[in-house]
Length: 168
Image 1: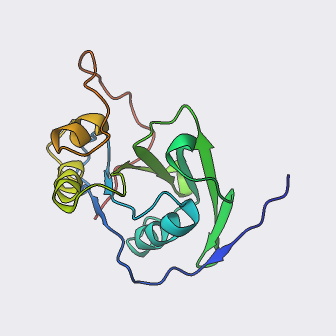
Image 2 (image 1 turned 30 degrees about the horizontal axis):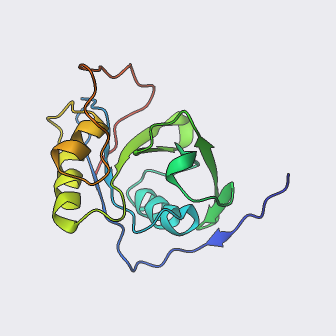
């Protein structure tokens, strides 16, 4: 199937609402958090990709949960770079993985768009905290984010990662 390849030049307004964990060598469940304004990948991913690229974290692919985002194109062109959008039913619903050159991965906790400002900002801070090994679901739940998943049955450990943590 041939899909269109929309070209996007994200405007600096509105500002991308996100936070990254400083690169320390330590790994947590996420490398930061992101609070999009909608679930439209064609609207939301380009400003995030542009912001990451501006920090020296180029993005070539975005992996996300299919059920958490509206249907859209399978690729975007952001500032002359083609970015593949890969939706999976097996992906965690509140995580997007930004994949750059050399398979460098940046995992971002996605805070639902309708989350009230105070809870969203608290979850962003928690997701970018370098001293946490807290799961994405726990960050959402502990910050009273509406629609956060129920508590898990026991502690989970993150499997080894093949990528680097993000830098701010």
